[in-house]
Image (cartoon, rainbow, N blue to C red; front, side, top):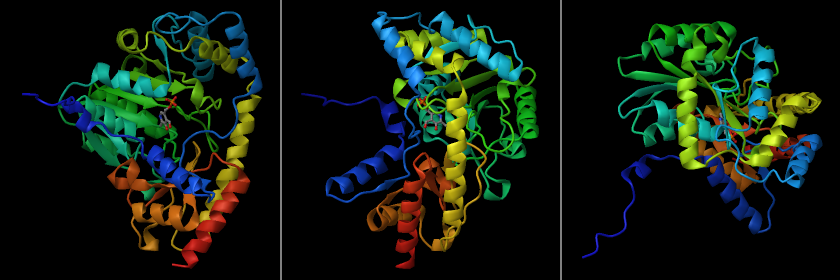
Length: 392
Ligand code: PLP
């Protein structure tokens, strides 16, 4: 008798990214002939800068179309080390302390897979990028959520982290600038978190993929706090800074023990990152940086417009974010649940935004808008929302 086809039990614990679900719902509406204003996807609307594309085209023409060394080509690792060393006055060894991967996401996945055992507790902000909780659950770890409070400008409070440490705590996940809240940790907070990590002999995984998109103040990297080179896995990449989401290229930086393990996993999963994307990434880091400055200054204009616009709508209150390209307005005074409002915006205003609880239970009462879209779209979307809220 057939046992029936079944799946690994771990799959029941895997989460997903709701952005893709809402995007699909919006596409259904568009298929029926209505247009939708998109605020749901977290990806730059800018095209990859021309000089970066040209570097990839040249690499293809030069026959750079084969496997590369598993941790990425040495020239790219050297360029990453130079970039980080210059930016943060540190001393990263490109040969043993960097692995290049097909995106930042594989770094999160492989890093967690290499560090977290069944039953280990991983402290993480909530709301947060949903993949953190999903991957920790896949490996049978225990996500320990720390609520991000609006009254603390959605920044992780180190004292809240300290209060959740137990003898099972293995790692702290950080994300600054933050998706979905747009908040950024202050220097003092990064220092205090580093102290907690050192005192309790923990790992810290610091997802700093938005660190080039910062509007007020400076980015403070966890990796560069004393003693953190031994304990921190820095996750970064090219997707957001250089509008390169489709190139699938990111990297992890850490001590040689964790980097060699991530590299081993990479050999098991993908052998190496994409060859010609790596050539493009060298150009991204070594070429002119005004493309980044220009994109950030455009995002800033959009941030100001969307914050002002949302604050002018009854029932919605929106803080001014300091980084990334997201706003996380409070919608509690609308009297609706986040998911209900997401559906209302989609069907009655033809605006796609994400319900806050898609980023964890403490996101209920909020919505996430990605403002990586033109000012015209932002204004159109805001007008539609305003009109739909007046009709309620
Ligand atoms: N980390 C955060 C916080 C993100 O928001 C995203 C993408 O939305 C990623 C990682 C994934 O980056 P990549 O496209 O390089 O895999």
